[in-house]
Length: 441
Ligand SMILES: Cc1cc2nc3c(=O)[nH]c(=O)nc-3n(C[C@H](O)[C@H](O)[C@H](O)COP(=O)(O)OP(=O)(O)OC[C@H]3O[C@@H](n4cnc5c(N)ncnc54)[C@H](O)[C@@H]3O)c2cc1C
Image 1 (cartoon, helix red, strand yellow):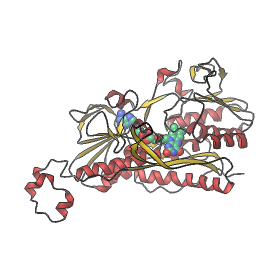
Image 2 (spheres, rainbow, N blue to C red):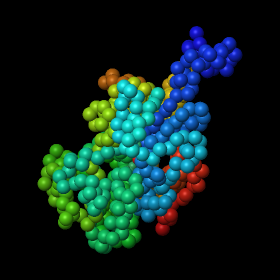
Image 3 (cartoon, helix red, strand yellow):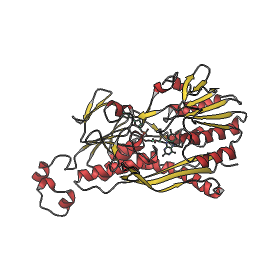
Image 4 (cartoon, rainbow, N blue to C red):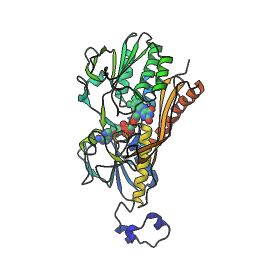
């Protein structure tokens, strides 16, 4: 009988002896070992939330970087609205809670033996494994592009050096240069990100290099918040931004780049020379997922009710690496999924039936000083049109063209309030609100 008792029953006064407790598996005694791979929006959320809900739990976070520079909100830095320091955060808040933070890379997962091999040759075991390594890039998808070419033609689709490199190249570009942003087909991290980036770069060019141009080469015909973005392109950056969307005849998917002279060639043979090339390559789940059999073939299938991996027991995959159907790959989504995964693991520890998971996302995009737009929805597991089980959206909303200046200013202020709030929730730190450095004028 002891083995089936829940903690609630124990607290409620059932006669249970210490011997009964010891006879239960460690996981059921709340002594489980949870290992989290990736200290970003998803992973750090799970580690901190679990430790707050059960301080006795052994939680280890594996993250190679000592500091996390977020990719989310990095367009604010590229456009001059925020500093890079504003985007950079440490792990001391999580360590203070008792999370064991190991700055090392997970090299291999053995889902049968329940072990993770680290780069420094150590091996650690787990009862539950949480995997949130973000994205990796398909380096071979574009001829001439590689990790080393990305230093001169930055993707800036991961935070840190790449974000800095893109801003640096913009600052060094002559007035009159052409900036080219290339956008892959979906799925990729942050669907509205390239168009927000176009707006903030065009804002910078308008102020600092007004003879310059910005060209978007997009591998698709439609994109997130399209009508509100198109209105912003027309209203603020008419003489700067030029958009090429792929249709049946013109395929603007990038086929080849030449870092020597900045040439970019598309599948349909369109050719352009960029003074600054922002090449966003096609993406996959984090490499560790592909190497460890969690992906099928490039992203990780999960149970939408829990984000439990469909490929391995006792493993949860969340954030950008997971196949979350309608839910965009965003930090907001990853955090929301992280809260649900932590609640699920805590329920399993307590042998409790978990509450149904509810998820949420909102993505804000800055289009100009004091002007931002947003898109969002709530999500829950359920049947999608066509019958397959997925994440069903409800209460969806999206900014529309023609909204008043007050409404847009309110959305802008929400975005700048959201970032430090989320950072505080992810990294368990006191993060002071920081408003935009740029004022409308
Ligand atoms: C330009 C841009 C703008 C964006 N703006 C927004 C926005 O405004 N709002 C929003 O919600 N989202 C935004 N995003 C998206 C957001 O950055 C991601 O969706 C989010 O960071 C995903 O969280 P994650 O936990 O999956 O991955 P990440 O936050 O990238 O964290 C993954 C972590 O795992 C670590 N890692 C990787 N491999 C291993 C390994 N083998 N072992 C150990 N650790 C490993 C990495 O070092 C990294 O720290 C933006 C993205 C971009 C590119």
